[in-house]
Length: 259
Image (cartoon, rainbow, N blue to C red; front, side):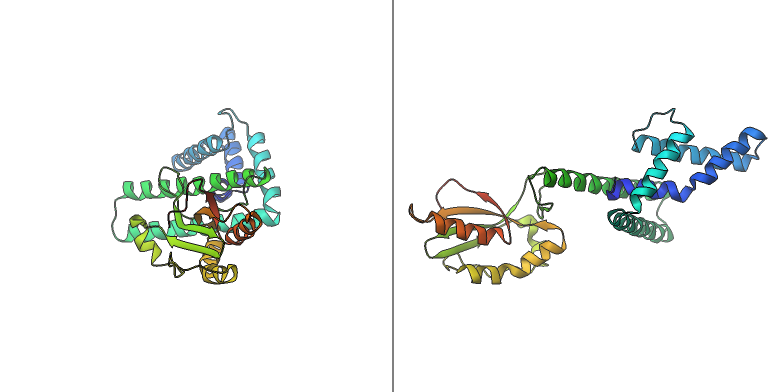
């Protein structure tokens, strides 16, 4: 429940004021309500309907059930993880509103602004879902919590380098990825020469800036690794492999090294 996408829904719930909504419902049942107030109540009811759907609550969820969920969220948000996620959620909401205000000032149609805002919430929700899946993988011992830095729209990973582990050390070459040309220019790419063999310390030194940039983005670049060591050099191979794993995630190739 600490994912950013879900917490954005919770922040919205807090923003509309659950207590105010509950009091207004009681007032409505006790006496007639002015048309303006009734319209506001209807708007808040639509928001709550969306929240029920987001939380997978039944349509007939009672006021007490929703209040219980709010209390659970408040308790969860008191933890350090919850506070961090709430801060991220508030920042995301502020950024979304700032963009919307800027576009509105430039005269963009309201229906376009609404679509943009809806899309931004969808992206935030997807980000939260992704973080949840990463947490599940980490808990199961299947991942370290970092996602691939470069992924195609179909979900497959793009590999930044081919790396050959040999008797004399490590060789590497960069893969040509035209769709990444502009983004590549923003990265601290290491100098690579397929004919140059690097000692482990030199490999780590050259790739350290790129590694740190991936840490800052909570992701890892992937490389394809080829084994060119001899049959009696498996200890060397394992040592070189651990060196590469220090800065990259890997795919082990079964075919012969291409360079």
